[in-house]
Length: 283
Image (cartoon, rainbow, N blue to C red):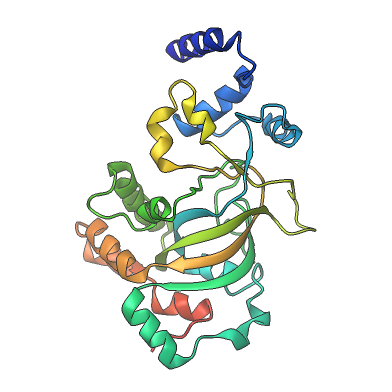
């Protein structure tokens, strides 16, 4: 931390005579703590949102307005609740299913499922029985401008970064602690960059913090390849889902090759059933 503060002070000295004023130190602490140390910010998040909306530091602090992607491993409960249940508008869209023949061609050549949807997503949302579908107390959550980066977290390949591969394995292993069998799969969420629809808590002028200009600050440059745009509002709007089921099966097999047979029987790749719950029938 001492080294961090020294770098920050040197940076301030260099910018002292410039009209391009740097961000306040407490904002830097929030960003550095989250990006480099994996720490969730404190209660000053609302002040950060006010700064973004005020446009006081236009060259440093700004909302990201483009598409954003988040890759993650989810369970059958998650799929049932979010893609086929209470948070989805799918009941109104059943007539738009792909035909059997077209979908079989699509599935054969692409090896993944994609469809448009409109759901509200937020890290603190609960299932019907009150179970957490994502971690609570998580005001910042990782998203990326890049689909390929998000996919590397959802279905890491052998050439991807170690922390992406190990994170995938830890996520699978986390379901073993539940004590019961469950189906799992990887999914990539796509957002148009907007906050939750009107009427949902947390609606704001934006949803994602653009980290691109902040990578110029001390200590942040090594993370620039992630192209991260963390969500900083309670709920965002999901406009499309991607289920890379062929890649997921390969990643699952590689990550669980040392598991005991009984462990693999408990945490199983959840492909066909998840697709059907999402409104797509596999043949």
